Length: 472
Image (cartoon, rainbow, N blue to C red; front, side, top):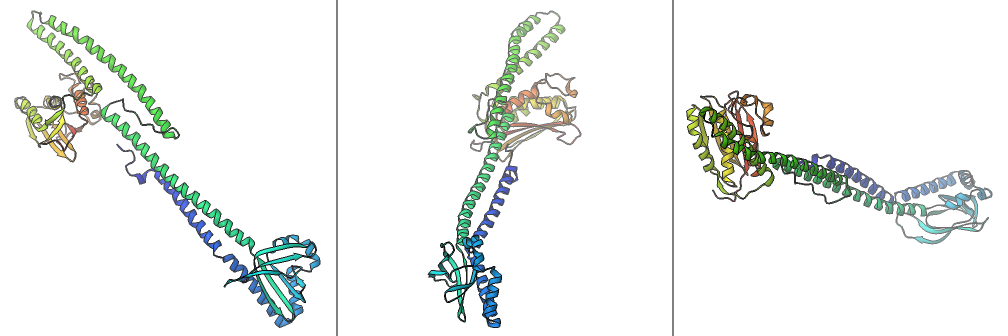
């Protein structure tokens, strides 16, 4: 049995998908931001601002004259150079500078010397250059390797407007580099989250398959595979295996005690039965020997069931014609059914599987014997054998007294007898033995309430693996 058949419905897969989706969204946003910063958008905006300021000051010059331009530049930048010594941070950053010069001297602006252009760069969109600005008060130089600069003549004055863009290029490099780093980390996170989801689902399914195999076969020797020690599921598997060790030990001890009792009592019971044969009273001899036979059959059945469940021996397995076996069982019980006026109908399909013919005969005979035993006169018993994809199904349905629906789950228990069958002969081991035989064949058994739709009755269904390689 697979616990998580639909991988997409597992909680681990959904968590992994959620993390992967969030990581992909983050990657898209980061790539968008990277493209935004690397597309010179901010530089274009800075160049547009410089152009707008140049245009505005040129318009003021044409309308009001050079004095208005001086006043605007001085007021707009708080700029007499005498105050510049108090604005060292402005000199260090030089975000934007505006200056008006005459005869190579600054008459207004937020820089004290005319920018010295060392090299101009060819750029179809921007006027970029490498410039040097000197603070005459301290003789400090500020070199801008990347700067936007525009210079226009206003009569005998020159207007200098510019902005250092080294910080923008640094921001571009920083954003691009760390964007790629984050993208790689997010991709790694997505892959890891999905891999962990797959790992968890596979481990859960492996645990489920082992547990299901233990339930189906009854073999407590199965253990969960532990191939790592770092995860919680491995720790859980280790604890589960320890629990199985304890349960197996307890069950084996109980079975050992039961088998020892059955084995030890079988010999004295045999001697007792032989002694009872000497009773002269015929009726008393018959009654007592019959009870002794019932006890011997009970102990023999217990030992037989124990042997089937613990040894798992398959020496008697061979290519078996199941149809012939079921037909022999039906033929064997036909006289008994006719004697009790019970209609025994049957329908068969040809089938040959790898099985133990003697055990299979005993299983079908036990169930059919119960069906006839617990059916009233005039009722019906139906035996069907069909083949489905990969399985051979044998169904024995009756319209007898049956059992209640809540008793169906107890029918495989040893010594269990439903209330309606307690007045009949039996020891409650027949279906336990049948169950052990079917499990030895890697098959399944289940019970159906009222299979013939008569309001009562019991159906017993065997499902055996159909080996397609065995010729019919």
